[in-house]
Image (tube, rainbow, N blue to C red; front, side, top):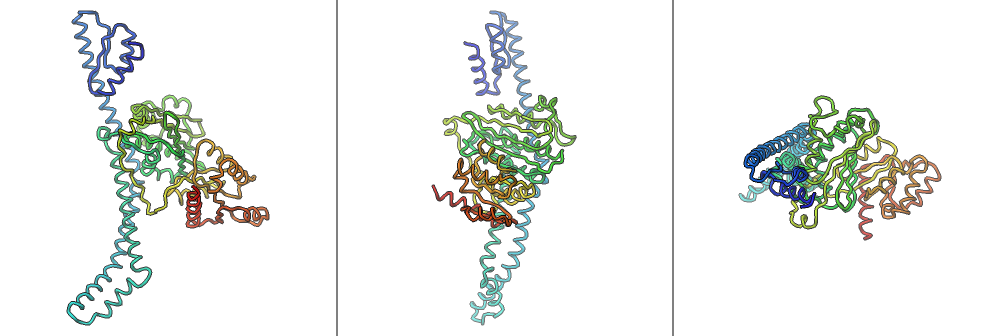
Length: 489
């Protein structure tokens, strides 16, 4: 057997039979090393008919197989413990996420009680009068009319029940996310998932932390391939990296804190990256950042196991976790996941996607917002972030670089009054390079009195929203340009 073939053969056997002791009696020492590298519990060169050597080999094989199994059990226990610790850091945020829709349900029940009970009592009185042949009480007719005649009658009550249903769906979704995340490794099979669904699952569990401390950006390339992975385990990886980013941006004061998650793909891997504007990782710590129990966080913010376990999870799936950092300028963690073969996709069932209920029927879209005012960007993120995927750029050059690097916004919201003709340069570039996105660009402007600005706006064929921007107006403009673009195809 050629060198390399032996290692691959044993690795394949180990993958198929993880709990079976594997030993290899080799012809030479190089084959011993190949077998051990492939995952054999023991390998040795044994002289023919040497019963003592063979017995010692079997004893070592059994011992090392037990040690490997115990190490694997400990690793799974540590992974589960780390996952539960991550959940513990999210209790406050999840509590808020549940309490908000729960409050909506409780308040809606009180309102429905006030509206419905008088109407039901009136209907009961009218029904009793009809059955007995007595005159219908005028007050019952008045009470019933009060709740049905106005625009706020039946439609108002229907709206209350719609709100209650949406809030209940939101609570159910959060509970499903937590249950999936907390499952043990043995309980979770691989399933077919879309990359954006996987990321949004992690964001629903941990994204609130980012929105409190900075702008959370989502930048997913179009037409990403599906993955075949255990959803909860990969969610754990993304959440571990998320939590690191949130802790990092909390360590330094910065007027423009951002946590950005991106997704790209080549022929072999999907790369999910999480970047932050924190302090970065010191050079002396960069090589040890994935070591078990090594942490650069303050005491009480972590065990030092999260990144080590995350890398181990991705490597077991055939992927990798790496980091890039310039000390003082933030860090970027890169999660690589292998793209499955067509055969694997066909063999793997696709479980239903977890819904993202928000009480709105508007589909989620990828929106790039370009503005040089951090306060405005944060306001856009708060308004749009719960419904859409938000990317931000501070000037036209940054927006162009993002689009060239693979960002695929469906709608662009552009501040017209950027310094240095930046907005007009960006519009000109869009017309030349991305005419489809140019037609889906919304201008935001204070108007101003400059004759040149007024002339430009008169000639601009796309939608314009005037500052101060009103949320309903901006959302309507987004829907309008998206629907118009859809109608072109």
